[in-house]
Length: 315
Image (cartoon, rainbow, N blue to C red; front, side, top):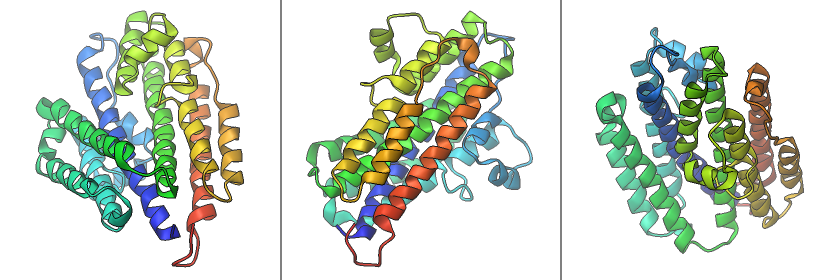
């Protein structure tokens, strides 16, 4: 496979996962607004800008750090390269140039998603219709992923899609956990049972993990239990450990994969459980930040290992 084709497949998977995860992140914060106990904590939408490393870009565009500006920045802002609309645009562009190695229906589905997202973006920005808009975006992404899973050969192209999908998913998993942990620290009521149950149940639902958590952990929802599940569960497809294992499996099917597998192994060794909810503090946020930096480094290794070739060379 040509390195430029491999790179486009990798990034189309990353951007598609980013679209879905951005929708999930905004959705969980939107739900929290309705379900947080009254007079307990005033939620800060600006947390989403901080955990997505968009502080400088946001502050250059907006003076007010309110809900509308944050949601607009995350969903539609042209100056935010990771906004939902920009990410869909990049998925479409990468698929357009690799249509010969993807199912024919892929092009139709991404165009449908692109048109819906652009034509109805005001629904996403305005709170009244936001939930329905974001759900439709998530369902559109899952439809594309289902098409790929059901029709694509498990060749090198598939492995690069898997690498992109699970690297992006692992990264966003840490960011969602960071957002929830920061909210608990911000409230200064980490031991508040009612607040914790609301926050962590929403986090689990944002990852479609609520029922899996109940079946696996067989306990009430506490911060430590929820975080341990989303970091360490071997079987849930959005947990940190599962994502890293899938990266290893995909890399092993490709040539010259040793350095990537070693980095994934190192991240697996660093994936830990949380004993007590009181451990979800600033030190835990620093730990998640270190994991995010390691994921960035893993992306660089994938790029250097398979994509940095002369035009026309095979990955």
